Length: 286
Image (cartoon, rainbow, N blue to C red):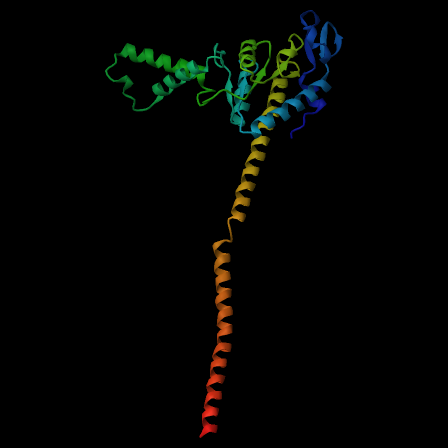
């Protein structure tokens, strides 16, 4: 598992929280001290939280689960899309559409509409005026922008990974309503108790976001690699139990034929001895 070091987090400014007047009292266990009116986050707690989140991610992905990456704020969207693509998971980096999770059936209809508009050779554009064609093209662009990270998501995710739990509050509420576990980077202005796996850190620092999300994406890839190896081992065991390979069978058949060939002269010698004995008996009688 990719380990994150204290020095790495410190170098990204992950320890800087918000000004003290904006703090959430439930964040107190993760605060190390107050300096110049700003809360300083205990990075030892951050490292432990990342470790817990990584282990949970491996459990989910190890069971063929899917994780939805969410980061729609300016500092996060490019990083979230890049890391989600790297580990082949779904993502939302544009505005969160209300009902993305709680009204997923409607979202699927919208995605189906997008795929129809994108289908090459479609008869949809036949006999349309120029204005109608432009309207449909605008609709296609809008839907593509809204759904580009979830276009192939056929079911609800098994977990949601969020950058900035305060900013993505709507996504978290929907996930909690459906009992979908939430992993989130939480800053000192956020209640960490509203998510299942809070990661206390500076959620406004691009470098901090990059470091943490990359480590969690690594956990996804490691879990996929482990699952693939186990599947290969199962197939190999099944092949071993299915019987000898054709080459082995042919070799065994050749050994049997060779053994039979070696035994044949013995049978022939016995028959010859019997004939000699019979001839001797006839000569004695004469």
